Image (cartoon, rainbow, N blue to C red; front, side, top):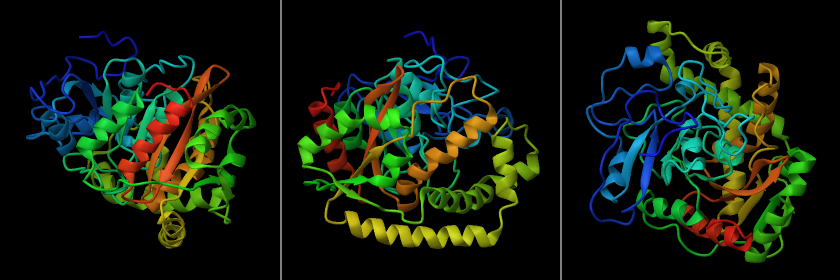
Length: 395
């Protein structure tokens, strides 16, 4: 068993399970974020009080079963930001995983341990979850591949909720081909076929730090070599700040509906940032939440109409590399807001999004995202593999 030098896995003895002797993933290893059940273990959800107040799981989560039956071998459960409510990857209770690609920076969250495990080559595949960016952002920050599949396409049975209308079961890999192989096991049939044209989302490119936009130009060119010249478009004339705010308000009431009763009954200790976000969720103005849901319907209609024929959005996954570990809480919050204005595009609309480890800025990774209509995840994974190959990346 490979030594965990980056703190990706939960402290203590690792959960390990042999996979089927044959299958499409035979010979590969996987890890799962500590919000997925594994039979006989307490699912800790990143918080000691959650672990203390919940019994061991009686069955494996659906995705764990699928991967085991496909021949993959489980090698451990990975750390998460507590209650999956954060994007930096910080966990004050169990330790923040080291970002293997940029040790002086955060790994990204909330699927921090899964991203770090793949980036450190401790496993081939790692399951995360993505509500507001929790697979896409750590994938970008750690320099690996990640997918947030179409909402509802992969079962979340046996997984802890945060915002059920936005939660997705995503995963990481260090190679585009392995990311696609996992998708062949986890995704429903269909969703194949050609994609195109390529649409360059101007707001997201302007939102990116200039150094990031420059660094991703070559990868954009690789995508254009596959799908043709990108057509510049705007998808959110309301502005990315409005996109973020509507997502924040609509998702917050879901977070409180999912976890508020437990918080009120248990009065758990919550770490910095997470505590404040749940307090804000509890106090959310219902009118703002309703406005967020109404905006979601408008944006969904706009984007699904735009992408229905096979078009693909392309933009920087995050505005820049991961924040430094020395960043203040205020600086982290500013990055969170700027980042989620972009991640909320797919999040609000239930779109599939794959991020490719396309470039580096100041030595730290940045990703390029490809986004397609709901249900086109298999085609999107195949496209990502082609783009990665054209960019000279590990496929």
